[in-house]
Image (cartoon, rainbow, N blue to C red; front, side, top):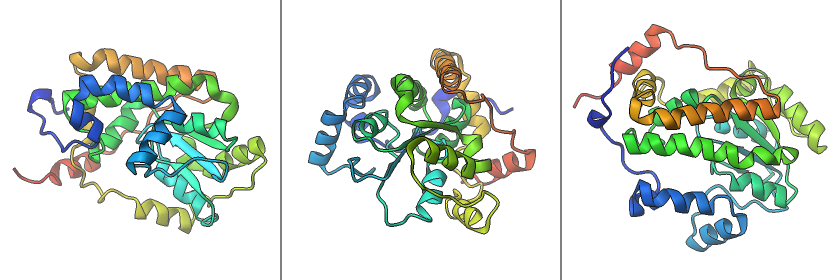
Length: 266
């Protein structure tokens, strides 16, 4: 496996203004404080005009919440296919979504994926900066998200990434039984589902960074405490919610080669 020296990794542009403004060390306490306080958080982002994930209120049909890279886009698009007239809350990747859903009595689906797989996926697509600071942030954010909602199990239905991509219909059935709703989704091997996957495919294998490079970096000594905490959070959340712990199947060597071959020359 290719070895990665973190200080040599090319950084992507900052993705979040709070981190750009304050820096990682100062931004993290503010991030953690705001994102478990629904009234304060939504009041602030509405004031700033930054509520891209949509307001969650009693008119919201469903909230789909997860750490980044856990299949949120597919899960949302597959449900919206048959319910385009409804309002959904998603893609903020923060625990306040789940808390606001409970506060407003809105059905909520929480997705989870092994942190090494979810983080590798989102970082390879440029969702977080591929640097020591960026990887530290996303590891901490993963643990923060699931630990913050661990005690809210009575307000959401949990589902693993593997369930979503193999039998999403069964997940939606659990959701309907829990909340008395009538959502639907296409079978995963249907034409409609395949079109959703194709639409959201990240330029084939042409990503910013290779998965194996990111996973090697995540296993560096300086990130070990954050990685171990994220992995323990994953196991604890799955145990608490009755989900099986799984990892993504290894990608075939040809796919890894395609990642390497697709990187732009410097």
